[in-house]
Amino acid sequence: MKFGGTSVADAERLKRAAKRIVEKREAGHRVVAVLSARGKETDRLIADAFEVSPSPDPREMDMLLSTGERVSCALCAMAINDLGHRAISLTGSQAGIVTDTSHTKARILDVRADRITSALDDDNIVLVAGFQGVSTAKDVTTLGRGGSDTTAVALAAAVGADVCEIYTDVAGVFSADPRIVPDARKLNVVSFDEMLEMSASGAGVLQLRSVEYARNHGVRIHCRSSFDDQPGTIVVSEEDTVENPLITAVTHSTGEARVTLLGLPDHPGIAGRVTTTLAEANVNIDMIIQNEPVTADAKADMSFTIPREDLDTAKDALAALAAEHGIEIRTDESMGKVSIVGAGMKSHPGVAAKVFTTLGEHEINIEMISTSPIRISCVVPGDKVPDAVRALHSAFELSGPDTIRPEQPFGEFA
Ligand code: ADP
Ligand code: ASP
Ligand code: MG
Image (cartoon, rainbow, N blue to C red; front, side, top):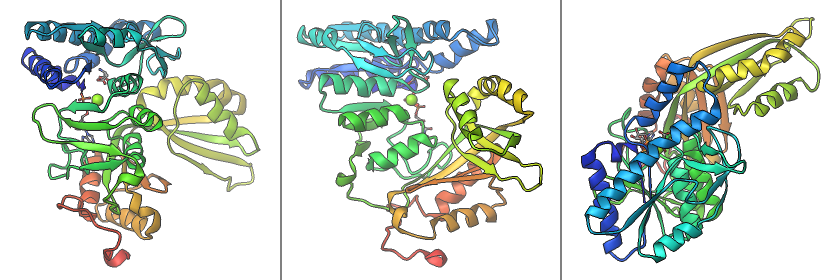
C-alpha cells in the first residue's frame, strides 16, 4: 500500500491511512506500506534549499529531501501502535533499497528485502519511507519527483506482493487530469503500453519509472482513492485489455523548456555531440527538431525540449561546445505539451489530422510535434495547455461512459 502526500497531509488523514493499513492487516494480509512526504513538504524543502543556495549540492539535497517521507512513516507507526498493532518504520536505506549514485534522480539497482521480510515474520506492519534509497557509494539518494510510486512497486516486486495499491487523491487513472477536465472518465483498466506513454507525457498520477518497473517485474498496480473504498484503475498487460479504445487519454505537461541551437556546423557527428553532452549531464531530451541549412553557409539549427528544471544544467553543459563552434543558444521557458494516447490509433489513420485540426480551430499554435505508434504530442505555448487538453478531450469524445471504438466511424476524418 502506498499513500501519497495529500493522503497523509494532516493528522486526521494520517490517522485515516493508519486505520486503512490496519484494516488490511486485520483482513489477514501481511502489509508493507510506503508513505510520501506530507502535503507540499517536498516543495517546501526544495524552496528552503534555494533560499540558502542558488544551486544546492545534489548530495545534500538528497539528505534534505529524504527527511519528508521519514516524518510521515514515524508518525504513521505511532498511530498504528495506538490502534493495537505493531508497526516499524524504516528509511529507504534500512529497507534495503540500493540505487545508483545520480543524486536527486537515482535509479533502483537492487532491493535487499530481508529486513522487511523478517519484520513481517515477526508480525509487524512495515512502513517504508518512499522516494529514497542508499547509493552504491553509501550516500542517501532520492528517486525523482513522484518517486514513492517506484519505491512501492520495487518493494512489491521484492517481497512478491499480490498487488501494489497506490492510494492517491483521485479515484484512479482518468482520461485526462480531472483537475483540468472535471468530466474526465475513470479508466477501469489501462495497459502498460498506454500507461507508460501517459506517465511519460505528463500524467503524474503514476511516476514513469514505477510503471516501467512494474512491467519489467510483473507487478500488479491498482491505483485508487485513499478517501473511499471504490475500485480504481488496474494496470494490466496488453493481452488482458478487454477494452481497446481508439484513444484512451489526453495528457499534458507544463514543465517544458525549449532550447534552440542556431548555427550548428552541418557535418556528421554534431547532433551526436550535442546529445551526448546532455546525456552526460543527466538531462533527458524529449522532442528534437533539426532544420537543414537553407543558405550557402552550411549551418543548421536544432531545437529540443527538456524539463524546465534542467535548463540551467543544459545551458552549462552546452557552453563549451557552443563556444567552440560559434553556436548561439536560445531558450524558451514557458512551453507546454499536450498528447493523446491510445493503443487503437496504431491501425487508424486520421488521428493526427483530427488533433492538429482541433488545435487549429482553437487558435492554438503547434510549435513542435512528436509521435510514437500509440501517442501524438504537440508542444504548444504553456498558457494554452488547459484549453488544448479540454479541446482534444471533447473532440475525441472521451468523457462518455465509453470511449470511441475503432470499429466506429470516425466522422470527417475516417
Ligand atoms: P500523490 O501525492 O498521491 O502521489 P500525485 O499528485 O503525485 O499524488 O498524483 C495525483 C494527481 O495526478 C491527481 O491529483 C491529478 O491532478 C494528477 N493527474 C494528472 N493526470 C492524471 C490522470 N490522467 N488521471 C488521474 N490523475 C491525474
Ligand atoms: N515526496 C516526493 C515528491 O513530492 C515523492 C512522492 O511524493 O512520490 O515528489
Ligand atoms: Mg505522486
